[in-house]
Image 1: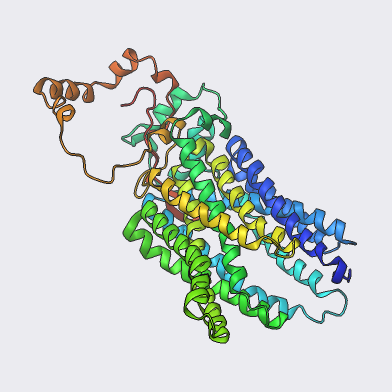
Image 2 (image 1 turned 120 degrees about the vertical axis):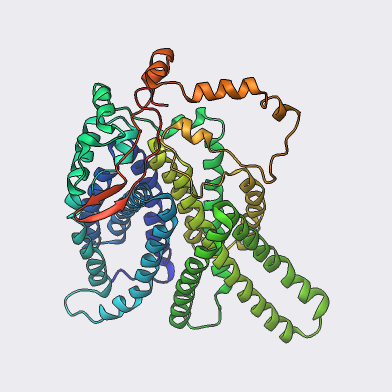
Length: 500
């Protein structure tokens, strides 16, 4: 339609570039808005504007209009992805968080596998171009997400963490009514505690406040570098796997289905790996595999040709090609696992009050990693070897930094910045009793600690000056019901009205 070939072929990469740049800005902006105004408003606004800009792309008149609308489409898609990810994490019990994330990943890969078939059905449309029909068909299912206004509730965890106590009370009563629970006889006294806190105004926390912490900002920066490296080096492996001598159409279909198949295999391998080794152990293992695959691909192939097969050039080229494809598949498999785990890791260790901003930073870093693909294609693959070398060096740096991360498996989600600071790295070796440990084993000290533990609630409320600033995260009914669907939800006690 617009003759994007030969001298105008660079405009295709600009369109890809604009979508990714829009996604990066969307993750950053929508993450902050999700922390300020809630997950539910960001979800609904993203769905509405996704319909508007997505359908507008199909009626673009030129490349400039197409690229501009793709920027806003990527912006809205980022808000939609981010809000759904946060809601899914905050509604699940600790033992189900990773399982539900993997279910969402399988559905996403399933959509990727279906896309070529949908594109084939759009060929030969009489009234419009194929790509316009495909764009409309892709966007139309977002209409089914409009009822989310009534189906999806706001995150109760976020309401409590940000002191929206009136809305929290109304939601708790609604949940109790659907579960047929009498809150007047509820032993934990959640509503009674909320009644004493209703006078407090909601508070907003910006992601910038993480710079005042000692451990939290380091964890988020490490995960940002991991996500950037995982998606960046993934393109390097994909580029090495391509056969330059194959026809364009055959190469595209083969590479597309190979990448989708690797994504499916990654999701299948992540489930037992994370269940056995945990989040940090699984992330460290896949990062080591990524580093080995990249270093062997960059160094081993040259050694084979230089020393072993110096004269047999045909055999040397054949072996180089086979080894390159093998290492590329292994590298794409492990780098995809690193990227997926880094994003999930961030969602688990970032406090609720800034979870949108923290997750937005990691997803934006992933967008920067994906952005290297159109940039390299725009430069006709010049500097590709240096590009691969830089990301290979980053994998080695990530392996060292990953040892600083905590292990959030089977742990409750942190709610405040103080909770996020308490997530520190556990020692690799068990603690051995030493001289300082024995100082705490005196009988008098044990009695003192027992008396502190058994201090009545009203004494702690009158004897502490910090209880006035505590949040109302005491407890939540153990089942979370929305439209007949019961979702388990357990909250973390953070001291309500002087509760110990």
